[in-house]
Amino acid sequence: MFSEKLFKRLYHATHITFLTGAGISAESGVPTFRGKDGLWNNHDVMQLATPLALKTNTDVFWEFYNWRRRLVTDIEPNLGHYALVDFERLISQVTVITQNVDGLHQKAGSTDVLELHGNIMRSRCSECGYLPEADGKILAFDKIPYCPKCNGLIRPDVVLFNENLNSTILYQAQEASATCEVFFSIGTSSLVEPAASLPYIAKANGAYLVEINVERTPLSDNADEFIEGKSGKILPMITVLFEKIREK
Ligand code: OAD
Image 1: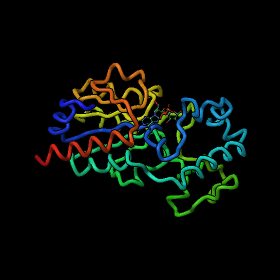
Image 2: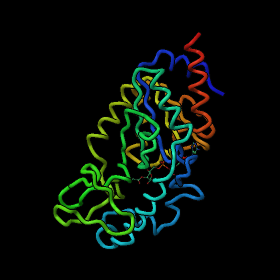
Image 3: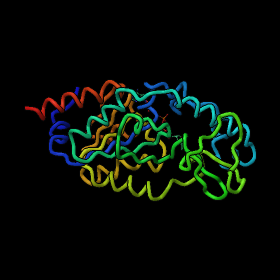
């Protein structure tokens, strides 16, 4: 199922980078975006995740985000998330770049996580930038929140459609992709930029490119290795095998 080359590359690696998408959280019960039960299948929902909807359709916007916030409040990381934490014992530098906003990598214990699309449990004032959670204030899930400093509209700290990513985090992600020796793309449809370009940056800089997914994506033919299966099953198998190889 796994190639000898993968373990050889891991054995000599000092820095590995993971790019994760909704698929890694699917086994925790978080819906993915595309595919048959995908969140974006409903076109109206896609139109909700925009800065315009925040301004003009605020109550429905927050209803949607509060529904998603509730969804991730009670969920737990799965074996896939924990396997990435295990890699930190085995390789000196491990970077996790995630497109997910659910915070499950941090909850599992990963220490170097770059959240490309923000975090749904964080919020910020759309006017003055005030950060309620950083100030110890937890927002209620049942009403539209307003800023205690300037009365501006509070919004979730996530990247909405038509918005740019945080440039510092994107730069750090590009750097972690360019400098790693093995790059894993896990549970992402590889369709959304700029995340979709990160595996190509890694490969162009000499990394061994591995994709783990339940189905093939536009990246699959360009990966050095495509491993078909659920990340919650495949990733722990890789860490267990790799640990055994290292013990020999
Ligand atoms: P998608 O919903 O587009 O893709 C999820 C991928 O996970 C698919 O390729 C599935 O085949 C795969 N998958 C599902 N279950 C899996 C499992 N158990 N193990 C491994 N793979 C599995 O989600 P993303 O690629 O993450 O952006 O979507 C990227 C961005 O599009 C999201 O971050 C979001 C969305 O618009 C924003 O909201 C800004």
